[in-house]
Length: 95
Image (tube, rainbow, N blue to C red):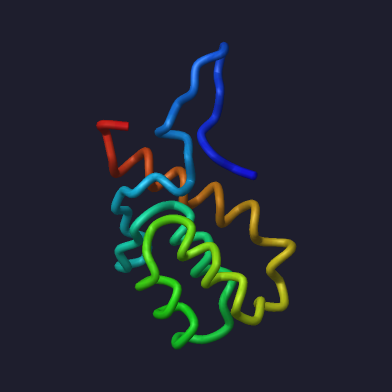
């Protein structure tokens, strides 16, 4: 599941959602695009903070599996993943 994209036989680590890199969306600093994505599924601030502070990769994905999902999650999750990755590349020019 997941991991870096492979383009023309070459792995590109910058495409990995778990790649540690800071991005700021709506004034909140996230540790990876996955960290942002997992935070957007929550229904309350306590769960968001727990995920936000869990780290950039596997830990935040695991934390995201322990929270209740917002009622519109299925309809917004693709847009939220896009928003997180767009911010990752716009704010981290070295990628």
